[in-house]
Image (cartoon, rainbow, N blue to C red; front, side):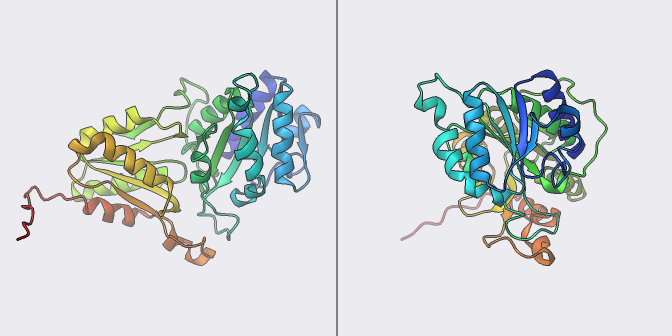
Length: 329
């Protein structure tokens, strides 16, 4: 996936001279995860450059450059490192188009390596999507495969609105055989990655591979599981998700972030509101635990696993017997 992201940045820089890439250690080092490796040598220090360790200044600079007609792509080195820039993101970047009644846009892409699974400590393993999806004016996307990482990043850079681009760190080294840029899905559409008839697993980013693995394991229990990859967290593709859940009648949302107040709560609410009369069981969530991110030796217990997903599927009321409502006297 890291190679696909690097290729997407290189292709965007080559095709559009308005594109600039900057952030902490993105030029000389090529980024902590080498996503920007070689770009400074190829495109020069005026278009790919390092910044001070000052995230708020990075985003503020990007807003000004976008207002002047450029298309900045900035990198937050790790998920929680982006919090010092939160005020710039939510109070200015997200509101600029609405504040100017559509006259001034802010086509800025903020790349955020997010999530756990790499043995990182706190500040290096946060899943911060709910903060951004709760902010009107931002688009939020999270690729789950290398090919989709390329397509989504190219679409994000071309987008006239600000995009928070969440890169699942645990998938940076994932590989697949694909043709980059061939017949990409629209940026705001979800994808059915695995068809099924009994249950819909709704996942994104780093949890897509876990959901697909769980779906395969579920066949041993006789469950035919469909997997929907959200891709775009905001806006949300209600059409694809509800069509799947209405077919299967059961749904489980899977994400790394803590469950309380998490993104999955919004997904479960939307699915319940729109699919209530098609549901055979309540929509369940499999999430990270409601604790600060644990040390590396404990993160396996914090992150959703195949076994936890299978346990949730098993709780989806598979017994056809109707239990009569209790009557109080």
